[in-house]
Amino acid sequence: MTEGTFGPGVAGSAGGGTGGGGEPEVSDSLRTFGAVVQALREHAGLSREEFAEAVRFSKHTVASVEVGRRMPDPYFVERAEPVLGNTGALRRAYKHLSRQPGLAAWFRQWAREEALAVSLYTYECRLIPGLLQTEAYARRLFQDQLPPLDDNQIEAQWTARAERQRLLWERPNTAYSFILEEQLFLRRSGGVDVTRGLIDHVLHVAEQRNIEIQVMPQVRLTHAGLDGPMRLLETSEARWYAYCEGQESGLFITERKVVSMLQMRYARMRSQALSLDDSLSLLQRMRGAL
Image 1 (cartoon, helix red, strand yellow):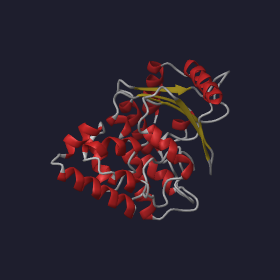
Image 2 (cartoon, one colour; image 1 turned 180 degrees about the vertical axis):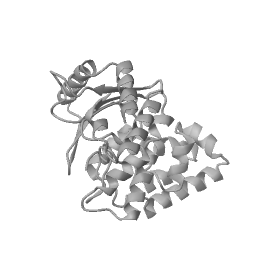
Image 3 (cartoon, one colour; image 1 turned 90 degrees about the vertical axis):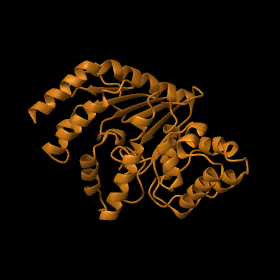
């Protein structure tokens, strides 16, 4: 389990913390907070679209917060307060928010930063990152988890992952870079049909102007990423952070020297991986060979 494992036996982001989610399962405190936001917004005479524009978040994010499906970001709270009357109610309520089991504690800080990043780089060698997974691929991963998940857990996992994937479409000004090992597609997780759908989806995502996807070829004499998967992000304040994850733990890295070292490795991998055009051509050939 990786990328923010959601508790015992529950994949997080990469598949999970590597493939899973950045969203919590719904809790009573999240529902209550969302209801307060909605009530204050309606009292202020603002539509959801008008409020979203005022707080500089998408209307989909606002909707997710109001129904208690999304953990609000601190920036959301600070921007919402003056728009909704500066009562301090949201700041006080925010301190008491809690998540139900579903998002590993070590992944939460990264998930908050990821949602606001201006640049996000991901190298993965184990499975397709959660942001790029199809429903069929993700459900296959959930079904293979040990200990096994029940149907409700699997459904909750996919709902969280699908919600997190909105980042790719709702943040067109964020620069996304993915470096994926060729073997991730050759493994054919879930079977031929699942793999074919996965490749089609990755090719579709790569059509976005702000998203770059490169494939690291299976045969490579030198490789700067042999120490394992990594993620890097840049904040709006030009700060860089990194995140590395294992099976039952994750490390949010703020130390500048370590982050700089990982940036160097990622930059080297970008030169070692296939070019953007060659990567897409390879994926198209792989799909045709299925």
